[in-house]
Image (cartoon, rainbow, N blue to C red; front, side):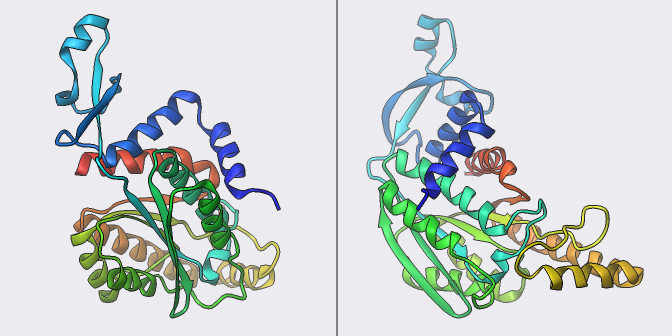
Length: 293
């Protein structure tokens, strides 16, 4: 069986040049670094770094600006909270299965975590059923997490992200970096309640996989399982402009609602349309999270 993590790393090297990968690693490390922690080493200054971290004596000696880096005394835990209901087997905006994009995002963040000596864990499930995989700091364990995401198919129960988040709120006491891998979700009172609770205790990164367009020039047509049903929806929307307009307005309202909720709670978020988006958007997500802290 081919390694999902190896495939993720291969794509990461294709999509990101060496400097971009270094910046990505630096942004991940910055989540758990701070001036109150132990000094570790120096690195070259890059735009966006806090000028208060510049080591001016070292800068004067080398003639180039250098940044002090600090390391947390204890290792950290990254907990992925993933929607593995049947919605994640559908097509994303770029035409790929949503689960492939989620695997890529989980693989990149997870490999950064394991590479820094941190542990990774997973809460996932479908319907009202939640399952947990404990925190470990090995690539073999990360591969197991990716397999859980990749196993999603249309025979699964419905997507129910709130149930996963409520499970985390009930069972996770230690302060953790939560990386939420979400399908399209409505910003209703239930979601707002659990996110407020989680945001008060944990750091949260929100990664949403964009739905396929069902109308207009960018519409993604059915392939594989569920193709006939998807094409039927396209046909109905194409034949009824009023219905298509109502659908587009509902999608826009849903998008604005989740963006407003996350912003109100100070949760950095990103939306991914394809695997080609992941490296650059994960870097930007980590950077926004660092700046907001």
